[in-house]
Length: 372
Image 1 (spheres, rainbow, N blue to C red):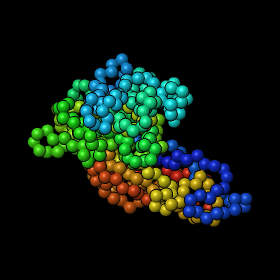
Image 2: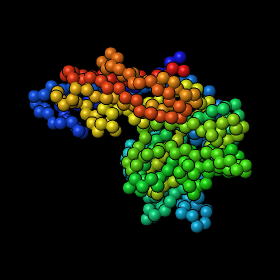
Image 3: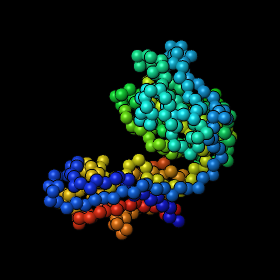
Image 4: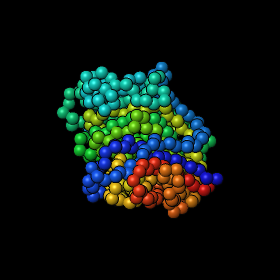
């Protein structure tokens, strides 16, 4: 059976004739234009066997909150910043990115499914302003489930949640700011809070086996990077949770006077057998390879063809055989990538060239499929 993921461009186009990136300049007054029209990305969701969920309701804030402020001699000694259950968004002086006014009035909460009844928030911006420090401290704070979650019926386990976040990273993209998911099998032994890299997020439960138990929520984010409002993120936590009769989940933040991080509508579920997604790279010019900017309008004579590209990720636990991207231009199939096998948790970039020699408007959409 084929499984599909479909997407189309999400760029609003200008009516002017422009040249960008590595494209040669063309006279905008005389050249005819070719325009690439954009549509929103859509996903065909796979049905989930959800075994635990939490809507972060403020009326049932059954979480355990903590931070490293009482650890003598640590970089976060005395830094008493906590997550909170709230119906508000961030209130710090730099909350304009979240729709705030910067006058210590809370912005609206993110647009998660159940934000009206509450969410989890850590407001580093507000803490930094209130503390009036010299921004030389390190915050290390977390929120974790109080009661254990039974995953004994699941061989493969995933977690998803809705989230909003903007990265400060000390203003210099120094990779010092982290949003993490961590798992414990006993509620006592966790990944070491003095480490932050995924590779260091292991736990030894006494038998000498190191269990991978940490996932970075926003890898690759730099100063100014921000999520959608909200973003739905998903992680395969099988290494720590698969087949376990009890696990605890912890969300951990570390940074220095950053912005904020919101979390809501958390689900733990059986990882689907077959599930492929277009990941965080989708470009109708394959910009990362070609260097050609995604200009909304191209002038006649600038180029006669482009190559569309999409990074595809295997979210399912089975290898996805004959994974293929099919490109449709103006309702007609323009071509397909070479079929490949995408292994469990693997990703690859699929590419399809398409012709755009004639002036006009081009509507381009993707369909990614696998035969399993």
